[in-house]
Length: 146
Image 1 (tube, rainbow, N blue to C red):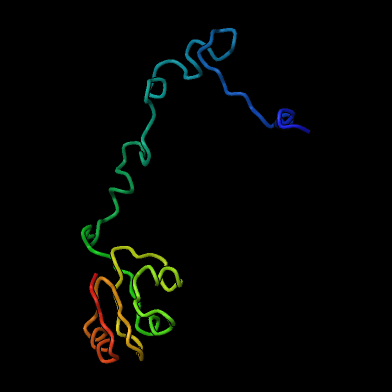
Image 2 (image 1 turned 90 degrees about the vertical axis):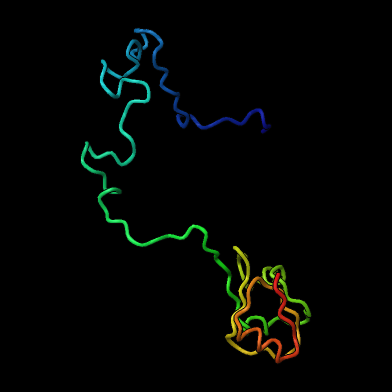
């Protein structure tokens, strides 16, 4: 068998309906749209969510709360996760991604104080909680903001 011999199985390819090609085709003149009316016009038909003039569901449901579009979404990492990393003196978000500790960086990495860190390491992140920075400094390490 050669590449030029390949073809779809019989009956699995349906031909497109060719409308507006004369009265002999059975799909001519009005092109299967009937006479006049909204659906016969170009761009005709109702929009998504149209409910026959009734107020659509999306507008009937009460809107609640406030969404701050400028809010930053940080990926959080605790000190106990950082303590598991061996053989690295400078811990950056790239190291965390490579080791599988975090999946996404989003707007940056925030280090939280959950757990203990025993060895002196330099940790580079966007934000540190005050307690986490204190624990890193007490272990002899550095908390550097990126």
